[in-house]
Amino acid sequence: MKRRIIRINEEKCNGCGLCEKACHEGAIKVIGGKARLVSEDLCDGMGSCLVCPENAIEIIEAESQAQRKPLTNESINNEIINKNINLNSWPVQIHLIHPKAKFLANADLLIASDCTAFAYPNFHNDFLKNRVVLIGCPKLDDLESYIEKFKDILLNNDIKSITVIKMEVPCCNGMSYAVRKAMALSDKIIPYSEVTVSIDGKIIN
Image 1 (cartoon, rainbow, N blue to C red):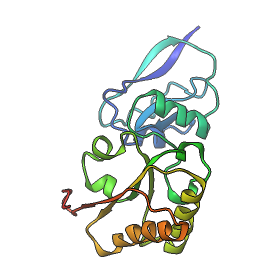
Image 2 (image 1 turned 90 degrees about the horizontal axis):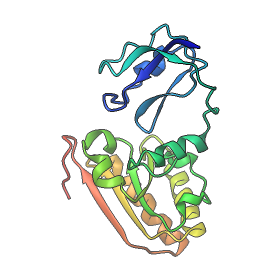
Image 3 (image 1 turned 180 degrees about the vertical axis):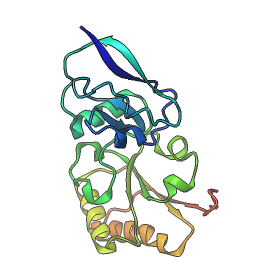
């Protein structure tokens, strides 16, 4: 049986999330930087999501399909990997990552102050490929908790390398301090590098 339902053009979608907020039925989720229709059964076809500034969403008449599987962290992770984008793991927030998570095994870590992803336009292409990313804010979060988390990650995994990317503002130096302190406490000194981003979005070292 045909019914009204939305169709999302992923090439046009910029991942802004306006459609997800507008969809009161919860049929749309932003996954891997793109809006997805995660449940056709929930879509009422009324078009509240047509607020899309890129005109990436349209209403069509289509045959109804079986309800998709519920959205979970595992399914999000699989979606991200299968789309061949540069984000290789989930979650990314430092406090949410378990020190024994499978994706940390033999990983090249990118530990990023969260503002860098917004300040540096080519963050995904230049830094995420083949790396596992951990993000946080050393000014807003407890630095000691970062040190403990990094230490636990190092003790429980064979980490191949660590790259710290931070902003040029002084408070961001706490991220590199926490990583170096964790290496000292865990007695694991591994290949390490730092990248600093200026507030106008340029690499300055």
